[in-house]
View 1 (cartoon, rainbow, N blue to C red):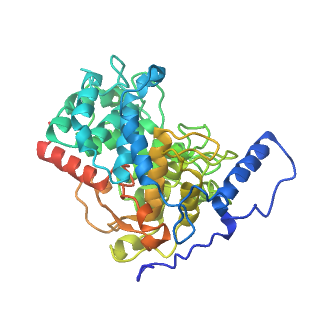
View 2: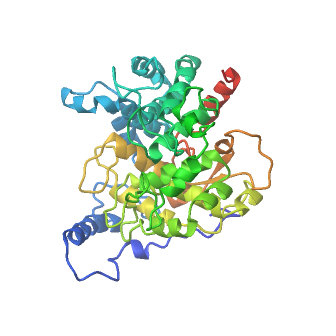
View 3: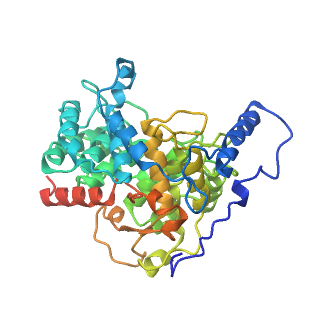
Length: 450
């Protein structure tokens, strides 16, 4: 138990029994929920312990060796049936490198292969496509940039044509403040988040290129109108939708919160542009008991990937509502978390691990790279106290520096999930290791702007 930290004694009671209140009206949704609980409870209670290694707290140990082998295999040549994933090449690399990094694996041996893979995907007019000959897209460009950051090195980072990317981002910036994900594509919060990740990490100019169409609407900067666009995406439920007047979704909530946290101090930006109490209520309702995991939308089942997409929202929200984080500094932890870290860790370790390696959505599904990446990211976040280090009154140099003013500490005692299950911390906004964020930003600060 941490000397100066809160009392983190686990209380598993609500995560080991059926819900006390159950709707008597049976529907297809309620039947699926009932089935999911039936699958999870035996694992949560440790009934099937024949092939599982448990720690002293009754939690299954993280089989990091199997999961690492699973992700290393995903970076090897794939069978012909995988051709349908051609447009997702950057994502498949990102998921694998992120998962391996969180597990503590060295990913720099992949540097040359990653650079060679991404080089043909860079378009002359800026940005990266999902595959060879495909148009540039914010999501694939985001995955490429973060993957290159993880493998590091001047050859990898230097291959990014920043000036062309800056001009391309000017094409997808919209007059209402938001971003399209590609030229003439859909506009949503993903575009805003991915764009701000690239602009901040690559040290791109904040001013719009002269030819950007948004300038005709009076906008001068990539930041103009963006927080207001995020605000318009908050729904009547309190959650965040991909675009105004659509359904709230956990992944869009993370994108909006992370984007706002790049634009300025979370205490100011999130509280100014979002209804925080309603958002907290909506996100709180996404964690289920007895499962302990998160669902991504109202009336949906738990899914391991939301360990990150919803679980990753909490450090950003906790920073927004707690000015004491900055005043406490790096010695103290908050007195309470806004979600059950214990419940999430139990769900991940008991229900999401595949015996053959990799992590999954829920016990009835198969593991894959996507779920392995985001389940591990959520578990890492639950194991660490990620906090913003400045108060609203502190002086911060101008520009997009706020995302680089976070720090991480182990949360509580490592014995709560067993030493072997403790993962490497990742940055709460960029979702890659802290060292990769610092090294990449440092490299492009030395390059200067153009």
